[in-house]
Image 1 (tube, rainbow, N blue to C red):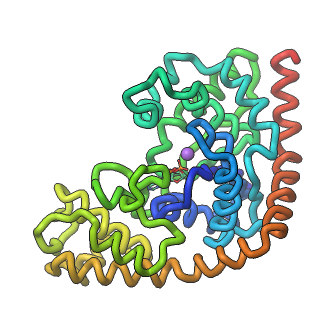
Image 2 (image 1 turned 45 degrees about the horizontal axis):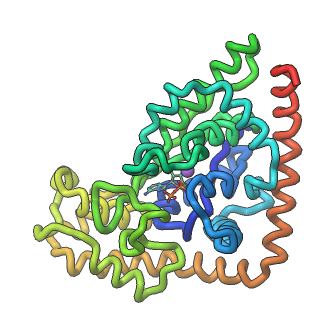
Length: 329
Ligand code: ADP
Ligand code: NA
């Protein structure tokens, strides 16, 4: 069975973008693949996280993943910092990856912003840790949003250079798995930027925990243009905000944008936004109920995560031990 690995940062409440672009697609892979999913707290601290909040957000993220359908009996679900293989391998990869490779990473440039000198060195080597996350399990398939494609290419460069430098055929090639119509959900305030849980503006995103009122307000205020919805998908081409809202409704209804336009083409955004809001509320309500139930028993949640970490370690530890032996430790 092909092994799948993916991770998500506990750097805030999971958003609709995380759900449609990642989490939701992880669920069916549990049945067809050897699936390993990780709440990546080591990645989260590449930018400042309040310690108390980080612990809370880590639990909330795990609860959200389970509420969205990840079943700790059908996949391995754990917290990154609980398994030391990640940091052991990441250090070795820091010594394999070249500065020139990291210099090309566009996410670092985006996240570091204008004052690049003030960014943490962790943020800079983040892709090396991500490569270690995947390769510590010799996973070969990584479901990601298309924002992560460049990092996966880097992971393959690292794997190849390691194999070459040490004269082995040790690490496999990794393929990205980009799924779904809403592979990239955009900000509600700016259709050219991706929706992100770490965006400064809460109005830019739908959080999986948002209630009816919050969703209604955010959708009503979502940026749009004055034209009604087009009848055809090519009418969305130069209209990123319209395309985003149509894409979101299509994704949560399990259909394609053309079908959404067949039903709603010609309507104004006022009417369309009401439909979208109700669909979002109906879709998220059961997830929110399940999340609340899970967070009501933190001891059980922590126990499930500890067990997940033990199972992850049983796979990663021998792989990383072999890497260390190849390196000469
Ligand atoms: P965020 O930017 O929200 O903090 P992460 O970096 O933790 O997200 O990414 C977690 C997963 O969610 C990744 O697989 C990423 O590709 C996916 N993802 C994040 N934002 C979006 C988005 N706006 N649309 C689709 N997928 C997304
Ligand atoms: Na990420």
